[in-house]
Amino acid sequence: MKGLLKFITCGSVDDGKSTLIGHMLYDSKLIYADQDKALELDSKVGSRGGEIDYSLLLDGLIAEREQGITIDVAYRYFTTDNRSFIVADTPGHEEYTRNMAVGASFADLAVILVDASQGVLVQTRRHARICKLMGIHYFVFAVNKMDLVDYSKSRYDEISRQIEELRSELSLENVQIIPLSATEGDNVTTKSENIPWYSGAPLLEYLEDVDVSQENEEQGFYMPVQRVCRPDHTFRGFQGQIESGSISVGDEIITLPSNEKAHIKGILVTDRETTTAYKGQPVTISLDKEVDVSRGCVLAKDTNLAIYKRLTVSLLWMDDEPLNIGKDYLVKLGTKTISGVITKINYSIDVNTGVHIATETLDKNGIAVCEILLTEAIVADQFEFHKTLGELIIIDRITNMTSACGVVEALSDKGGTFSDKATFRYGNLEARGDIFEEFYYSFESLSVLKYQSVGDNYTIGDEVPTEGESYKYPDSFDVIVLRDGIAVNIRSRKITQIIPVEEYEYSGVPVVNGRGFEVLVNSSDETKQFLDEYSQINERERNSFFANWLKFDTYRKVVWKTED
Image (cartoon, rainbow, N blue to C red):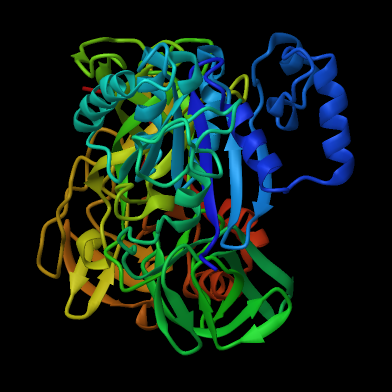
């Protein structure tokens, strides 16, 4: 038996999506006896004059039956002798495009229905574009209602040419075109005698045989951290689902964005210990050392994943309120939720022609390529390389409405890998820091953002910029980068020493952390206490630790700035 196939049915209103899937289930004897009787009884008071209305199997909501359309996404699970399936029957009406996008986000294959009497419509194009946007690589265009055009081959050929134009325009892969009649059962589960000129397989047979495993495997191992599990002081585990690759006890991983290296100490799948875990498994991973990891971080091995602040994304706008450039939204990517600002709409896309249109706003169901600036760098990648780290949703901070969904097309303002991000470097010692990064208040987003004005690395002998728009440090001070365990001595604005924090000795000059906040120590004993407490704190104690030991505004301030 082939593996599970997750597919979506979509198309314009009344193209017959629910009827098609209902007929497939009915013909395949995949409904229970009581469902069978209820279906026949419902149909007697339905819209087909007593004939079985197969759409009633899926259109379960009263409002849907009254309107004769699907509103919600109806999921059905079924198994034939050859394969198991999950199908999402999605709304066709433009008003419910966002519901359709939700269904597309989970699917491997799209069945897009085209009414033989109407041909390819605007909504057909919209749904094909959204399916492509959501990463679907396999498409079946089901030319439905062939009975209404007397099973005309010439009409089928005409629609096939329209579909080929759409395939070329959107660069769709693996396209199959099947003529059928959902109400009459032609080419649904068995070959139709009414369509002798079609030599291909009926729909169900094609779905049973299609191989959707040919997509490129994602690079390496990665797992976005969903939760940090700390039942007591003896155990700290990182929980999440493995999105790519495999991991074994003893493997070295890197934590992102902190870029610390550690080895796998143990792996739990539910409550069972294992030595190796694979893609798709939910796991709890423990490491051989304490690392700076919380929800939204990523454990990775053999990847080129990095952190970024600016994303170029393709968005489907789903909110009733139009997109506002400069408004502060929440961006959810992977397991990370962070504030971000849509700074620019590069262009919107005409769903009918594919033409790029210059605009400064985007209305509901519109598709556009936009620029997003995040408040801090997060782990992300292009959707085509690492799917889970390349798909996102935009959330309105006030209404909590899901305003948009989309995928990452390009990234910039790279935080990078450990070596790329190191602010201080000497020999094999590297330490990151935001010490020379500006903080400004954005009038557009009404929030504090960080702006990377310098991207230089510094080593012993280099002069450092002790004054910027939002910071001013003494000419002589020390920097303790806690997360990397490195101390930096700066005297007369020049770096004199970069050492492991274990070798650091307090010398009476001011001390700041890696972000430029004052460390409230005034003696060797206080410095030792500060470092000892940090080495012992757990996740829940971090906020109180930093509140006790750090002061923001001694050397830093937030400046008013309009983003370029």
